[in-house]
Length: 356
Figure 1: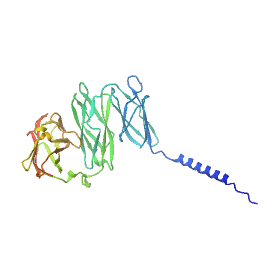
Figure 2: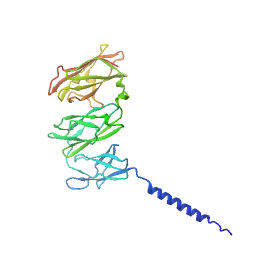
Figure 3: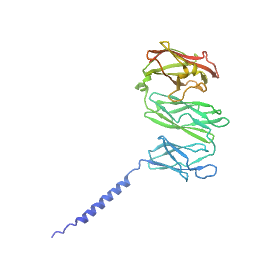
Figure 4: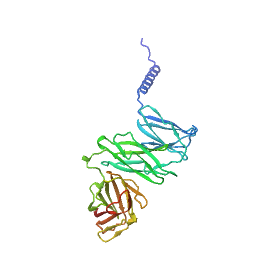
């Protein structure tokens, strides 16, 4: 006589098997992310620093330290990061952190008392396809004396000129970042650290992959516009026209300058840098904006522009209120007020026949 099967017992056995399989699978799962934990302390007395602002790059995530000085960033992709920590009354500090999947990395840091003495004019430089050189500025925001600084970066495809310098109070120093595209085969990023007198600031470098065989970029300036004639201020300073477009009543053109002599600082008279169209209209220079590279930094009458030897620097000129009947800018003068340590042969750059 056959025994009756206990369905409840069978169901219990099946449930146990499923749970066992799930537990076994969970043990086999590989953690693909990591975390950064840290405590921020006062360098003088060792006490926790609460309310400090913490920035994680790349990614731009932010948080603040708690009353115990602790902070954390969870579920991060493995790789190299920088942590920047700042608080009023303390010098800003930065630390590089690398970790692999499943690791909890330490981000403990000390903050020194004192006011910040340096500042960067930007916290990120983006190199679009085909671009190899950009400029940023180190500014001395201290209340007295000069400040010395150095630059460090672990990326082999990146170089900077100069790698160190000294900046007087209230002044700024230009730094050129160059990218060796032969050493990259995909989009890449890295953090450049600027360190000065107990504080450090990160500058994120982002590079979009591309090579010259792909056409040199998607910017409309690669193919649009023309310039009939360019007269440089000096035979040792090369000027290359890049593009010109007209959007509504705004004309924007770009050109690049390469200084073949020693490093040079120039003060421009923007107010006197007028433009004239082919219909006899004049566009006063004080309405014109001249941007350095792809940044939002403009050339003004009071600030010096640095032309480092052998470095090509791009400039973008924006002229508003251009008349509808105009078909070109017959002439635009970029007037020089003064320069050091050498004087050019002519006190202006001249672009003629700029068409969009």
